[in-house]
Length: 363
Image (cartoon, rainbow, N blue to C red; front, side, top):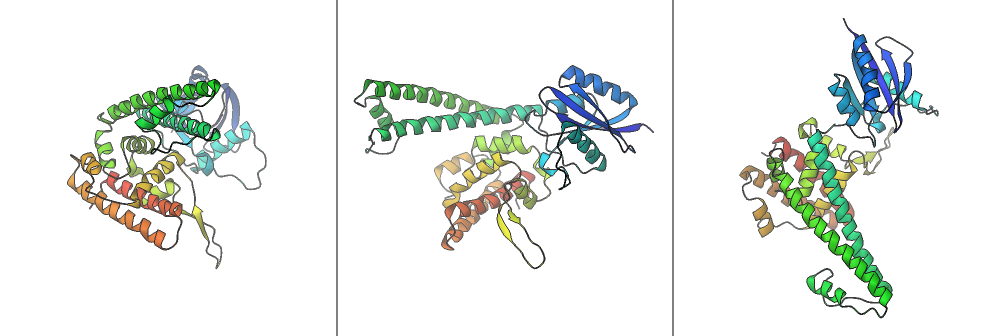
């Protein structure tokens, strides 16, 4: 019977502190290696000669490159969720060696919770989508800077809403009474034009990615929901991977941090705001989509066009979801709840409907 080795790793930019345990050892064997592919390969090549190896490290800013390298070497790797690693409340010491040792012992005890590791393709698309959102955020900030500049000069546009063609023409010919102010505004407008062009190109590329074999059908299903277009649909698919890893809609809601927090003891039962655990990026996108359910018109031209070619069962399912979510939002408003709280409650139920659509529970 081959020997089983457990390796906990504390990873930083320069080095990896590794703690090795056998099935019965009470003390770990620790060493420091360089955080470089050659050093990692050399270390684990020696370990695999001793027996079967399992390794774990905390999820963090280094991504999943180490995970992919370890699996290519035949090592069973776990990327642990940092917030779910068991720690003693009285433990006030934290060092790289202690962290590596803790990972090794909890890995052997089976107490680590692994994060989902996306495929290399999904990871690339996910990072591309996040970059697109960063560009959109830069565009929003650029528009705010222009409006704030005008407000500081006491200038307001009163012929309609901002950022229409007429508004931009007005900005291009606006007399600010100062040559330096005009140069400032022109620089902002040049940056705005550059960002708008970039965002337009990125949006076209996102639509192209969504037509790939891996994403076409799931994107079409998710885009049938009101408030969910291609970028949000792709984000959910690449961030979640397989929706079936959640056994129920409630578990998916909890993963997104949309369930109420609770602190109950004895006869006292206290529930607070949402936990905000899990994937904050998807939670923000879901709340953004939930705002669209303040009203619901399934016959709108945009929705009808987006649902063209979608399975009729999915369309019936998302229509039931839309009507229910709209009723819930209005019901909470009539009870005196703030709109932000009502939308958060709607986003929680929307998460459940998304899970149902993606796992095929649309009956």
